[in-house]
Image (cartoon, rainbow, N blue to C red; front, top):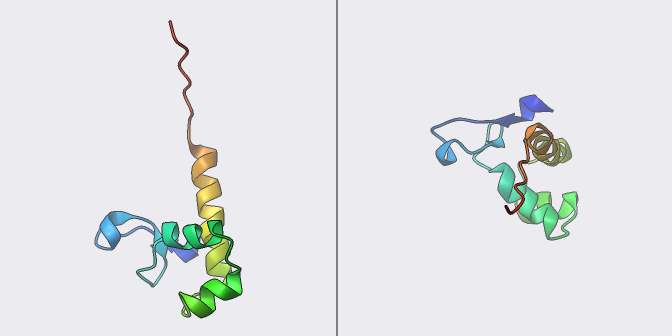
Length: 76
């Protein structure tokens, strides 16, 4: 799945995009978050995407969260 997502400093200020497109991962995830089905996203918004591209966006987000360190501070 990682070959489907790329980060290029010359495209969308270096934000992750679907490889070979200018479609930001965030935009795809927002549509998924709004409850749109994969076929709806492809038909109504990004016909150049494949289901595997949308799955890669979700996997990318999961991987980013999994690698993130969360620091919780407690009040003194």
